[in-house]
Image 1 (cartoon, rainbow, N blue to C red):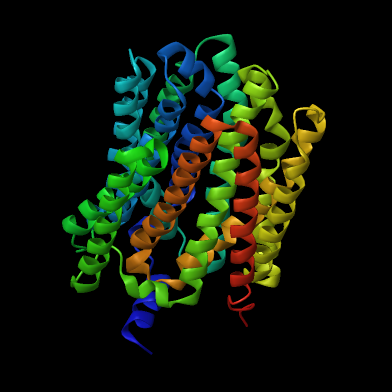
Image 2: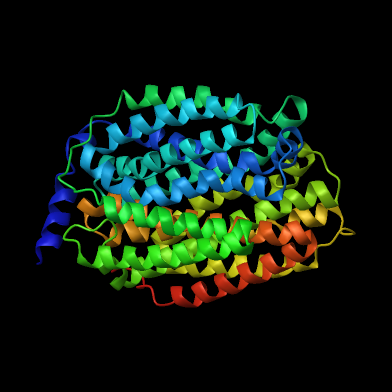
Length: 456
């Protein structure tokens, strides 16, 4: 038995002080934290036209409202996983929740677009600290792999409930009050998360070094790539060059450091490689399409923000139940089956949406969005659980940060690219986005067939 396997076995036999107390508060805090982070993505999309009208922002400005959050979130997730391991998941989660709540208040009172983008960037940075810490809290609280897998599914359900409520809540707040209300709603939720955290045993610290050069080059690469996709032109070409050079430097740094921020050797593991690519494809399809359809429903169909939010309700309302169902399917048939089936259903749903146009009935359009959500919701929890089981316990925070950084990066780039197309022709952007998303998911569905079968 290798030293890594021995360490993993020891952790599962003696999961540490955090698991000696009831795991309920840790799971509740983790679920609420993930819900907050996810809510802030889904609740913003339907409010974008109102934000643009109030702050006089064009399409690129609206893309930055989403991507300033997503970019900070994705870039800092790479090192925030290691930070959660280094300072302890509970401490990292608490600090992130405080900053996230304060930044939400700043978004709500922002007098103009620059102030809103600055506050959104801080929000994204705080969310980056919270997310891997929340998943690490679940890992620490549940020593048994079976119970942990079910807890991960419930953690994911917290995010999917937020996805379901986000468009409707955002539309209702924007229509009845103002787009500013979508940020103020985070304040009481952040306080509840902090109260729950007081009932969680402090996490152990691990001597995990931070990789500042790797983090800086990652930020430069992601920032340059996003800027190029949104702004285009000569400045965009220069930004793309900066992104390419920064990414090459990132790979060189990570391959030579003794303690890299992103251990490149992780990608030699088939489960890890499939999980990150499939997770990225799911994010492109889901977040990219929610962004484009939010604009389509309001600008082409003429719906209000609330009407647009209600259009997503059939799609998102089933997500939490599908997450739980996928956990049961994974327990019975192994993770491979729900991962493959879920992605195949999502591909079929995306192809079905190609029939949507301005003359389609509202009911048909809302129902055609359902297979995409069902497929993504069915495949994502076992993807996450499989990756967390494929890495040793001491890499839990790092693995969570890596997986979610890649997912957020993919979602942010999808919004940047599809938004740039929408600035020219919204219908063309819709068709292109559907085809690109379906193609990527079809490829990762085939790749998922390489995953290990059901464990004996």
